[in-house]
Image 1 (tube, rainbow, N blue to C red):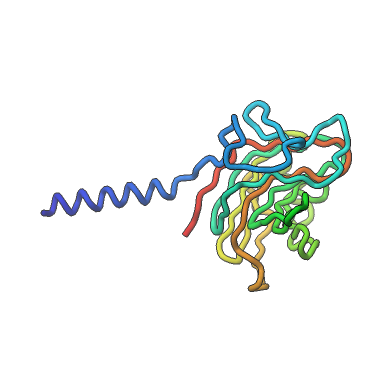
Image 2: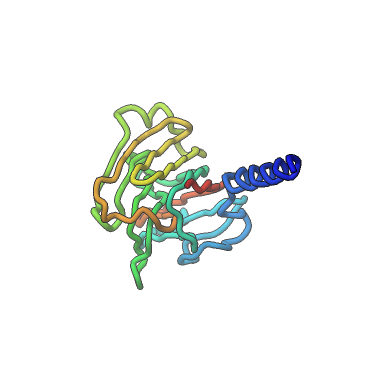
Length: 205
């Protein structure tokens, strides 16, 4: 009987560990599980490449997950290539605006003067939180790969770049949804490429 109970506990523990293991939400080869205007997204070298370096980007465009998420830790490597006005970002707890190229939701921002900030896309249209002066200059690798980590737990959102926390924000408005899709953005403007790879997500209770 004791052996039987031990076996049950062992299996339950293994299942719990498996459930907590981060999963890849982009396989590096296909857009399975994602949707968007594929005119502005492609796959190269195992990464999602948004935008291009030849022509202007007319509108903000978003590659969205088909699945929604609530509490999670999202990790990915990102690289932004372009001029000083190059801009992109990672949307969380987001939803599409019907029959429109835009989305509504929180954005972990990328771009000169924007890295490590939390922006509210198409809703309040304002910066919700930004890093302390000088932080980004110390940690950011310009025109190279940087590691972004996004932690969403209840109303609290924390952003990290290359292991350094940039913001710690708690939503005060109870009407703001705590669930939504994840999306990869290329911002309208001059020729720009935003690269995203090694995208993993660990769901939290």
